[in-house]
Amino acid sequence: MTSIETAERYFHLAADVMDLSSNMRRLMLTPLRQVKVQIAMHRDNGEIGTYIGYRIQHDKARGPMKGGLRYHPEVNGEEVLSLAQLMTWKTAVVNLPYGGAKGGISVDPSTLSEGEMERITRKFVDEIHDVIGPDKDIPAPDMGTGAQHMAWIANQYEKYHGFSPACVTGKPVELHGADGRVEATGRGVAIVTEAALRELRREVKGVTVAVQGFGNVGSYAALILHEMGARVVAVSDAFGGIQNPEGLDIPALMEYMKETRKVEGFPGSDACKNEDILAAEVDVLIPAAIGGVLTGENAPHVRAQLIIEAANSPVTPEADEIFEQKGILVIPDILANAGGVTVSYFEWVQNQQYFRWDIDKVRVELAKRMAEGFGKVFQIAAEKKVSPRVAAYVLGIGRVGRAIALGGI
Ligand code: GLU
Image (cartoon, rainbow, N blue to C red):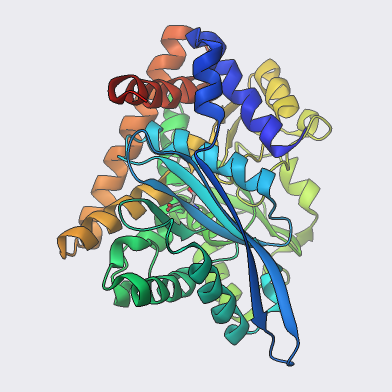
């Protein structure tokens, strides 16, 4: 099943529960605008490199469109469209005044020098600056991009439009970024993990956790859960995994990663494979890397009681059905990883007001938004007797649908 088929399958499951008309379904699934551009630049070796960039704007019924930019070799129009759709439902689930968008460049960032990375990013802005902006569509980091990319985007955008720090979020703190944005997605994941465990009448203290993917999201989710008293016993990255049944020292692992860029060889751990992480004997499994990792094939081997979708679309519909049959609780991406876009919203608000919040305020407001979203999703799940995923879509689609109905077309 392709990424867009997956996204639409989940949409229709909820639309059926809501009895949504076929006209509304078509309207809500059709993206507003799809931009595909050529990005040409001089490589360091004097050759010309040509790449394809995308910005897909899915829906703006609830406000300016919002979503990250992904630099990855597998970026393509269909994947970006499915991720843009997810952003529309995600911003609605946590009740941010935004629509949804996503973008990216089909490129392997590890093949680019720092200078090439800057040139490709600025060139991309040259091609899309007229369709983005603080009140139109606000990009942010995603896989393969971070604060430095956002600083280049703001700088390039401002060459055309003048001072506008709110044109992009996830910027460096020294350049109008928000304190707490880097940890935000991981912190949101930890908050919903605690709330989901409460539903299972368990506490975070002492639960065992496996994290697949130790990038920005996975590492901060592991760190904050570790601080809350959980035992993170296995983690993996693109190169391999490590485990220690007594619990890994996550702060030390994060220090270690700064030097090595890999989890492999961390003192006091044993090596293991990526599949071992997914099938680890733990209470909580957190897929925090790419989409489509839990499939109909490996889902029967999962032993966790709770799965938190820290990545976007890590559970395929086939796997989702298996988890439902086995009674494994899955907290869907559009709720579980909404912490990132929530703090992006706080950054945008601060930029618009020329006012800086302190980290405590960011954390308190994030926890409030996540708890509200979680509470609503579980209320709908109980009322309609559906899974949290279907409930989250019902919430998101319902809010977007009401905005469309009120505003008119
Ligand atoms: N890329 C992140 C996501 O998938 C964050 C988007 C944002 O901050 O706008 O939710």
